[in-house]
Length: 165
Ligand SMILES: [Zn+2]
Image (cartoon, rainbow, N blue to C red; front, side):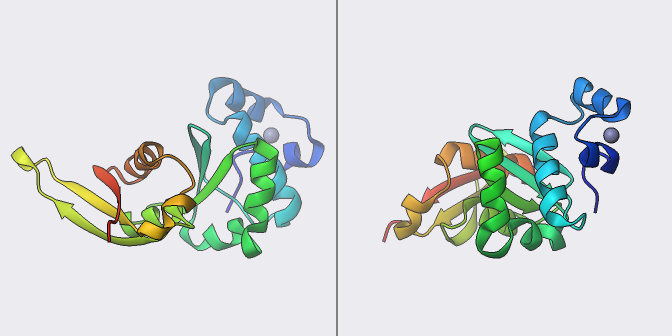
């Protein structure tokens, strides 16, 4: 698992021409760079990620599915440090995860109570993701922002609703 910036740059703190070009062309962002620096320092070269996506005040880090736990860290320690560094909320999701795991990772610590298909007219189907009512205050962001993130990551049409008991 690698970081989007090379080891030489992470060690020296100065960007090489290759990484500088990536930053200028937008292939990597300043946030990618900041996150890579922190992970390089605390991850001992063992924690990596594929890319980041920024939506509102949330940064989603996409990594291999088996790296999600490592990147979050014990009791969320690494995520908290990353969040402090970039000044935004951080969510970690596994690459190519299914709708259920993406929803769980994005909405955590709020719990998902269920997902079902809502059949629309003209085959305009959506997945309705239901959130446990008592957890609605623990959602990491606004419903519309979180929904946008889930749609972006899964390519599905979704709608988020808080369960009513
Ligand atoms: Zn470099």
